[in-house]
Image (cartoon, rainbow, N blue to C red; front, side, top):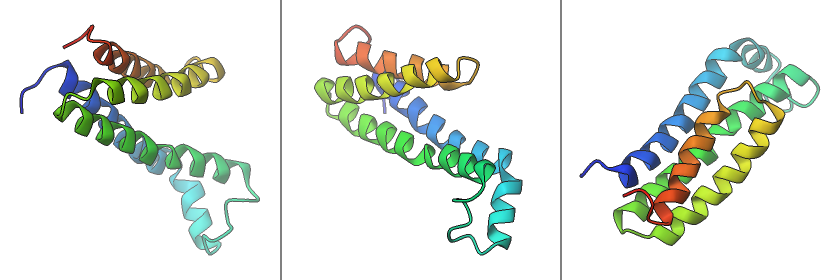
Length: 124
């Protein structure tokens, strides 16, 4: 595999999703452990900390899916699909930056913006 922007950015997005899951489990291990002790099923609906833990961690798989789809699109030089994925992730990241300006969501904004640029042929 040749390493260039078109291959590195999708990998970066995928790794970001994996890190999101890992960080969620690491950062929120206590709420997850407490939910396990309470039977897990339905244990997240009554506690705000557990809800945050669940939503934070559940955000990882969609990011991984977007990265994986971008990898497949990059492999066949489907720039239109890369652009679409980039726009959706950029919109999500812009919202995230607006509500959490001091969070690492900037990484997703940078990567998704690069994906849009790749889709328009600005980065090769």
